[in-house]
Length: 457
Ligand code: F0G
Image (cartoon, rainbow, N blue to C red; front, top):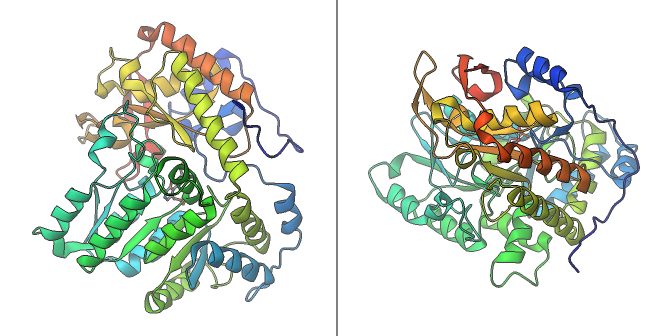
């Protein structure tokens, strides 16, 4: 069968706004040409993030009604904890309100100033939280990731040779943590193989370093392992996810993605001593260790979400939805990072807009045009986000690629929404030279892309 229908149907809907072209132009201008400044009621299809933007199920909402809001020892905590313990296999679990709180709490207790955190690719807040504790974030993506068009199955892997060279070299002493992001959100939603996780873990342990997972998309990584890695076809996504967690000394999870909820996160640990230190900071800054900043009803939705997300029929339909969307976009004349991952498509804006230099931010220009033409919101992953700027906000060194991420909320958009977006992109691809570049008007020093303001050139 060529079609995989999703294992759910729509019960509650939310209106989608359609602005006129002049209204969109005025909205983007007032937003300083930064999609983070747009209002949700100005957006027709919102592909800014897959984080906290998914639809919940009837089972999750029914469970939420049972939310126990006791300050300590709530029933909802134990339901969530039991699900999370079964999934991850970790004895020591701490709830947090979202992934970056887990980053702050773990890095404060695990990294010292001057140390290095090494990863396949740090996500933006992860990078920032490493730097906030005075450590350095080093990315070592595998060489295959540099070819956006190749169909290598595991372009999310860490470069094992480079990792070994770092650990064995003069800076090896400074490495405080090896952290693998599954799937690799910074580089095309590409999965990490179990073989790569195992080899990275072995290297980290050989050099006496802790090995952790940033596992926001643990179920999607498990699904791609099942499809692509020899030896895993007969394992369930849940078994594969558990095996990945068990390779590591612990994990950070933003549950706003594969937790299938609007809010939530988790720290999982094997080491009771590290757990004690993290728990103290959690209580001081997030909340008591049986709620960690979450409401009982959130914990209930999460307990159910952790089961629903590893359902093979759900994952098959979601993976197929993204793969089909990628084909539509490619057929419309826009290249995407190959092969398609699951949580997002990454448009190759550099290739579509060769008349724009990196200093004119082609990814940003494409994102703006998608909003102006179709009310579509996306996220730039190019020189605006990753390039180095001087004090006058001039680009000094560009990003390796000029990309636009279309992040796909879980269980939210239908086939027609995807076809609509592909059509808007197809129209842009017919006459790309009409698209102008942008210049920065003002930018903050940290996490630039969230607060930058721009203007057309
Ligand atoms: N790690 C990864 C790999 C992420 O993708 C994110 C968030 C975080 C950590 C932080 O988690 O948002 O719950 O605090 N990614 C979202 C995105 C925001 O759009 O990719 P958080």
